[in-house]
Amino acid sequence: MPVEYAAFCELHRPRYLSYARVWLPDADEAADSVQEALCEVAVHWRALLVSRNPTAEAWHILRSTVAARLRAETSAAPEPRGSGPADEDLAILHYVVGLAAPEIADVVGSDTANVAGRLRRALLHEPADW
Image 1 (tube, helix red, strand yellow):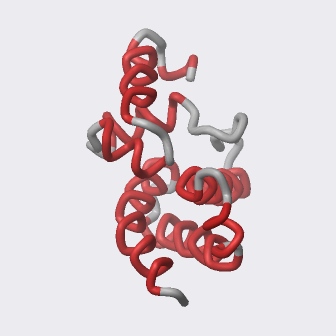
Image 2 (cartoon, rainbow, N blue to C red; image 1 turned 90 degrees about the horizontal axis):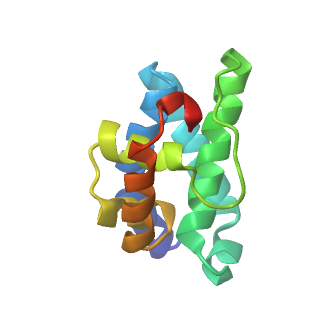
């Protein structure tokens, strides 16, 4: 694998794993889902690099992988909506995982101002409304 892919994995794997652990409390299931997502990212690596936002594309792959694994176990899986991260994802990354808005923006492939605004908006809603 290219050194860029290895660096991407080094940077994002811990954050991806923290996110996956929220939805998949079993550590092995969470780790397997992250590994599966990163393998899919590897398969599409060249295409991701020329996409408009490679980090956002990789986040979508991770979120879809976690949702599919959770759907296999329960009906409480997060449903992917559109191409960007859901407010629920941002709230999980901030309030549960403990990432600041700039870190979240880096993980999901967004800009810090957008993330900060959506986090403020998420505070106005109950988790069931996410």
